Each structure stands twice: as structure tokens, then as C-alpha cells.
Image (tube, rainbow, N blue to C red; front, side, top):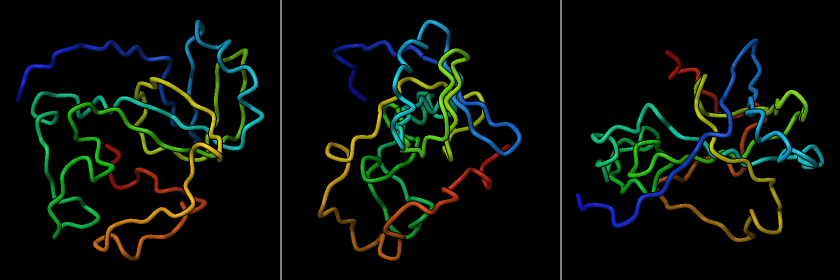
Length: 159
């Protein structure tokens, strides 16, 4: 693996809280002013750091057989796997509520573990964040066109 030519610093702005069948993002006090007007959006893109996969071993893995297509070898950039050179993940979530004062953002579903660092939030803008004629490869045929209302969850991966 080559040595990176530049280094970037990413600081968490908060963390994931999973309690009582709800998912909340607890935003650190210094970042709470950035929540202003977020509650006017229906969805938010949550960028999070997959810290369980931030080891040198995982960050050097460049191909895999994804669990949703185990017979198919892919490059990591053709997956949504947290195992990648930089384990920055993104999930578009239905926004259920924002409490600016307490720094709590409630979302419908998020495929991140309890305590996962949140590194950024971006309001979902349909004009920028969706495409009209998207397609997926043949080996993913059969996947639903839209995210199920209940989300995809972490049930089988919780430890």
C-alpha cells in the first residue's frame, strides 16, 4: 500500500445513540448552532466513521465477496461495506425531529452502532441528491427500488 501524500483530519461532531427502539444523533454542544433550520427537511444524510473497521488490516482490503452477493467478487468501491481505505459511511435517514438546544437529532433508521462517531450532517436536497435514471449492476437485480420504511437495521450485526 502506498504512503498517503496528504493527511486529513476529521473530528466527530457527535455520536449515535440507540436506546428504546429509537436512533438519535447526539450532537456536541459546540456544533449545535449548525442544527438551525435542519428540522425543515424531511431527510438528512448522516456521515459517520465506521470505527470498528478503521484498522490497518481492514483499510488495506480492496476486494470482497459482499454478503448480499457472496458469489460475486467486487472492489470495495462497488460496495457499501464499511471495510474500505477510509471508513467514512453515509446513510440517508428520514428526519423525525431536531432539538437544537439539547443537540438531539432523531432519525428513523441508521445502519451504525451505538456510540459510532458522527462526522457530518447534510440536509437532503432532492435536486442535488437523487438522479433520474440510476441503475445497478445485474448481480444486484432483485433489490427493492426504494428503502423499506423500516430501514435495513443492524439486527444481525449487533453485539
